[in-house]
Amino acid sequence: MWKHCDRTDEYISLHDCHGTKISYEKGVLTFGFEDGIWICQGHPDNNVDKTVRTDGAEVRFFLESADESDITIYVFEEEGKKTIRKEWDLTNLLEHVNNGKGTVEFLYQYKGYGTWIIECWIWSKKKPYHRECELKISLAEVEYCWNDLHEDREW
Image 1 (cartoon, rainbow, N blue to C red):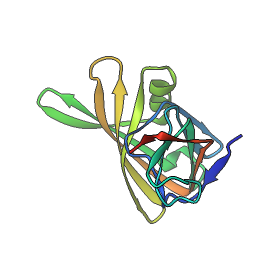
Image 2: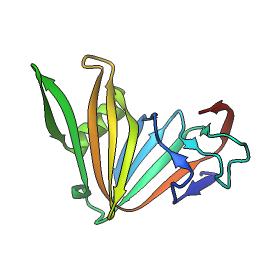
Image 3: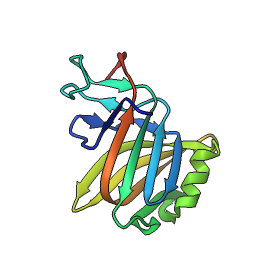
Image 4: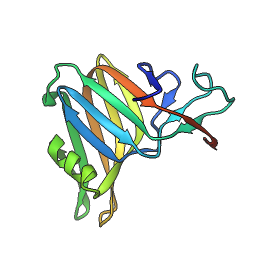
C-alpha cells in the first residue's frame, strides 16, 4: 500500500502536521495526515537538498502493552480565568477528528524510556477554535508511511 515506511524518525518531523483521521485497532494507534508529513534533508528517500512534505501519510504508534491504557490524552480548557486540564478518553479524540469536527496539529515530541509526550493543538470548526493538548503514549515502536514527496512543498 505504501511505497515508503520508516521506523526511525531521525529525518522525519510531524511539526505543524495535522492528523485528519485516527484509528485504534489491536494495540496500534494510527494517525492519518491528509496533507502529509515532513521528510528532512538527509533521509535516504529524499533526493532533494531540502525538507519537503509528503503526499498523504500515516503514522502508526505500536503501543507497549497493546492496550488503550498506554494512551493518556489531556486537553486544556478555559473555565473563566483559569485553564483546566481535562483527561479525554480515546473515544472522544476519535470522534472529534473522524466526525470532521476538527484536527490534531502536532507541535513537539519528547521521548524517553518508551514513552512519548506529544504537545499538540486540537483544532475545531466551532469555538473554542483550538485547545492545547498533550498525548502521552507508551510505545514499543513507531512507523511513518507515505508514497511520494512534493519537492515544491518545502519547509
